[in-house]
Amino acid sequence: ANHTRETLRTARRIFREQRSSIMVATILVLGGSCFLSAFSSLALEVFSNALLESVENLFGQDSAITGLSILGVASMSIAFNIIVAALNALLYIPYSVFWLQMLRGQVQPVDYMQQVKRCALPIFLATILYQAVVFSGFLLFFIPGVLLSYGLVLYALQIVDHNRTALQSLQGSWALMIGEKWNFLLLMCACSVLNIGGLLLFGIGLLYTIPI
Image (cartoon, rainbow, N blue to C red):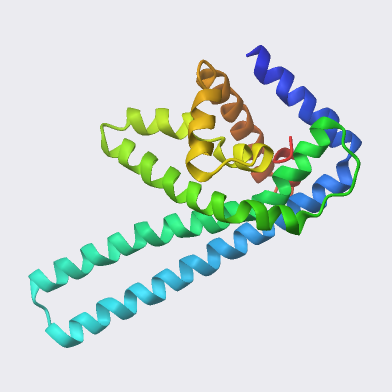
């Protein structure tokens, strides 16, 4: 609880000092993320409907073929969502670099595009690994999935801040979160409450609550 309060206090202090810059960065990230999510959902729906319609036209109402088609669409949807999550993670590279600068009081200019180029492939691969591992954990009676999701969640920061490979980032996150999973869970719960409050303010409040 003390860690959570201190973390939120630090975030609020930085937000007050750099409000305009942080809000611009948050708008860009949220806008890109919303656009990617909406576009990917629409593309998946169109592609899935076209596939099912084509199968139905070719094979009619055969239940076995229809079942296989639905299974194929479900598998494709899972794979598609994992890839979209990996692409979405790339949007947060400049945001992560920006926040690391704020936390450390660094004022020197940073080439964000260079940071994206450096981190893009490791983060893309690490996100696919993360999603696959966590999904497998949820299939094993749910609890392992929860533990893995919290234990490996800091993989992107490991890449951005320490220049890790995809596998090293997951290992580094797990080592970093040993003994800290409950503190991180409390922090995420506190952030969730703040973000729900931001949503209730017609979504505009998210510009304040997400950075905090």
